[in-house]
Image (cartoon, rainbow, N blue to C red; front, side, top):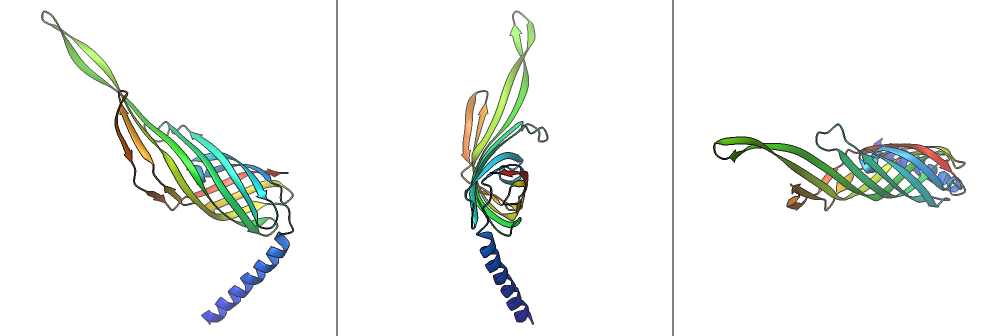
Length: 209
């Protein structure tokens, strides 16, 4: 029974693939798109532009974007900057598509903490006065993130509304953390590989000729 179900499923998929290729390869899509992505490649959000360099057959394109996130929700992490680039491809029907891709995101995140140290200075002959010394601790983390995409895309070949939703694993490679205390660098360490497998993104935007 399981074998019959598997054969029927494969037959259905092959038939769907054949007809969708014949139909889809004749559809020419508008090459320009702009969209806002929440989470996804830039972790928090990004504003993106995409260009299809292959707008017929299996559609293929490149996108670039950036996000600046003044993070008021995590203590002492006031700023996160992400710049993204990605290859994208999609295929299946007229409006509803399977989408895949891969890219690189560069991140820059800061962590700053200010503190004040109270000391006392001796003033001859017998007096002391309080002296306040300000200290600044700053941690900077930066480096590339490799991203992979698999998801759903809504896009009409005649343009208009564009919606994307995908699973986007992220791999933090060769990232470095630099720590500066009172303008003196005290460490510059290479971070181990970090994998964020449960990362997702949703995009909404507009497509035009």
